[in-house]
Image (cartoon, rainbow, N blue to C red; front, side, top):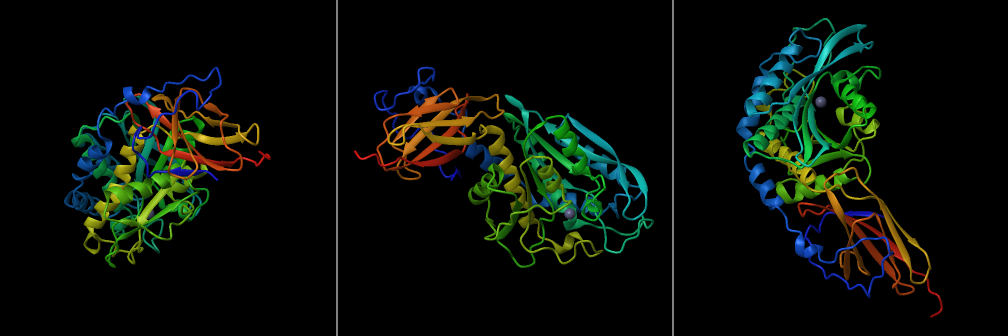
Length: 430
Ligand SMILES: [Zn+2]
């Protein structure tokens, strides 16, 4: 069974085995001196700690009050483009030069047949090495109140928790990345999505996240993952927990749990929910084939989708901690190489030989791979560096379980998380 290991980010701390101990295929290049040559350009954990310390609860509250101040953010209200332009101006004021309105024609048949232009707001921080890989953080900026009629476009729709909280966290992460002059290896995108609410009730509605992720799939965009923050400021129970809605044992959920533990005061819920809300922003990315996660408050606000969904009911400190999870995950992912995919360990001779192979990831920064081998998970006796995506081992002992781990390295000395697989050699009567 494959596992993603995030506990070990210590570089090159195990012994390099000798050529006599490991025989490699002739066409596998190797460099046992790699450890001596590879040094990290900077300490990534320190960068993350310093950046996240700038996340301000006061800033988040300020954005939330401005968003609530629109009176309504119902997507069919006449002011909906003004809200998008406000968000665009925020990113520009932080120093982002690549900020776009991503417009789409919204058609709903649920309430009435209605057609309007809607606008996602997309701010891009281009990667310096691996720019084609994108990591996305986003939140929907529209809201809806229970019982609101389609023609009632002037009703009060404050939407503080749902979802000025997620939008404000997105803005704040963007602000502190600019403030700290973050120059990520991979590209980071901040997206404020339009017209999410109808996606929950109208299977045919073209929501902002559906529009964006469908286009991304059709364009073969290399989206590493997408994190949606939706309802992240309710903390009337003084929670120290946060809920992750996700699919499968993915890179993203493992990374996010690791960042949450390392860089925030929150604890992932003991009941991590293995789903994304159908029709929610993260679910459209998931349906279009991308790794997606919805981060959410542990106790759901009792006020959401009502006129009492106002800033005074929420906890900005809690919201700040949730923002740190997303900010930290973006930073880790954008500097670390992508982990290898489809690791497979095959026995060639059941007693002593194994053939290890894995898939290359779409990451231009990768310079090679470390292979660790041991008989106890997490304790590896040997490590070898190869440039190719396969490796042969012919010294294994019969009837032993081996743990074989592969990680990717980039030219700046950073190592991806470790992907582990196991194999048991057969007993051959020796
Ligand atoms: Zn929402």
